[in-house]
Image 1 (cartoon, rainbow, N blue to C red):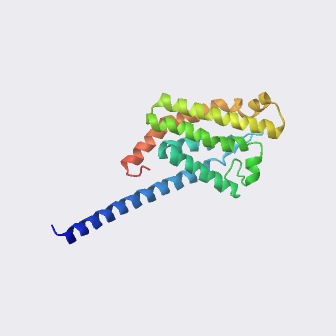
Image 2: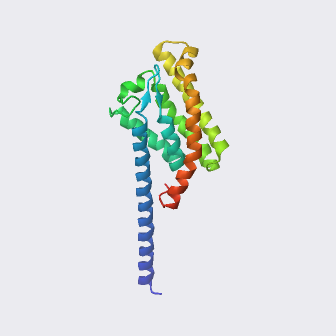
Image 3: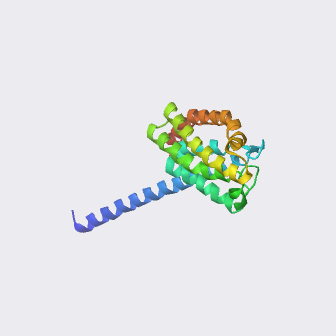
Length: 200
C-alpha cells in the first residue's frame, strides 16, 4: 500500500472518529438540556405549607441522575440553578433571582448539589439496584436537609429543632415516595433511552 493511500485512510478514520465524538457530545448536551428543562418545569410546582414548600425539585434531580449519571446529572441541576439565579422564575412557587438563594430556602437549593453527587455515585456504581440506590438518595437528602436546616434556622432566627419541624420532618414521607418512584422508573427510562440510542 502506498504512503498516499495510508495517509488517506488515516485521515478518513480520523474524520469518522471526530464525527462520532461530535455526535456523542451533541447528544449528551441535548440530554443535559432536556433534563435541565424538566427540572425547570417541575421545580416551580410547589405547595406552600410554611417557610419551606413541598417541591418536585429533588424528584427531577433523581431522574436526571438515573438518565445522565452523576456528573452530567449534577451539571444539569447546576445549569438549572444558574438559570434561576439570573431571574428566570424556575424556583419553587415560580420565583427566581439571587434573593431566593440567600432567603430561608437557599440552603436547600445549594444542598441539592452534594445530594446529587452522593446519590449519583451510588446510582452509577450499582447500576439501578434498588436498595443501594435508595441508600444513596437517603444519604444525599440527609446532607441536603442538614445544610438547608442550618441555613433556615439562621435566616428565620429559629432554633435547630424548630427549623427541622419547619423544613424537614413534614417532608420525609413525600421525599421517600419520590425516591421510590425514581428508583423504580429511573432504570427503566435509562434502559429505554439506551435501546433508542439516546443514552448520554
